[in-house]
Length: 87
Image (cartoon, rainbow, N blue to C red):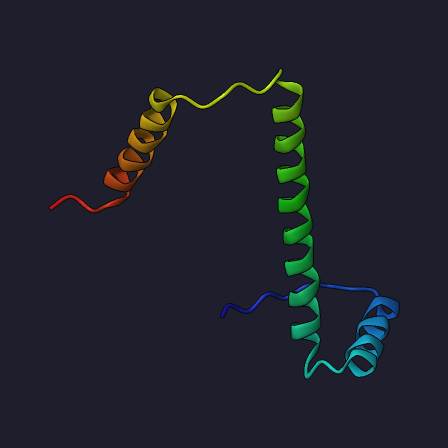
């Protein structure tokens, strides 16, 4: 864990303290961490939705061929090899 100091108006600090009590968090840090985590999840969902829409807009679907599956397999193997440390 790292420490992050931020300056907030008193009204926001009061709101956070109220939320901590109302929602059952142990500390303001837990509450703020949850807010950030939720924001990250929303961003990832938005990115996924954008990619899915791009896929839908890319044209009609075509059947997968054995060559398509082999290419996917090779790309996956290449990624595995690139991720492994050099021996």
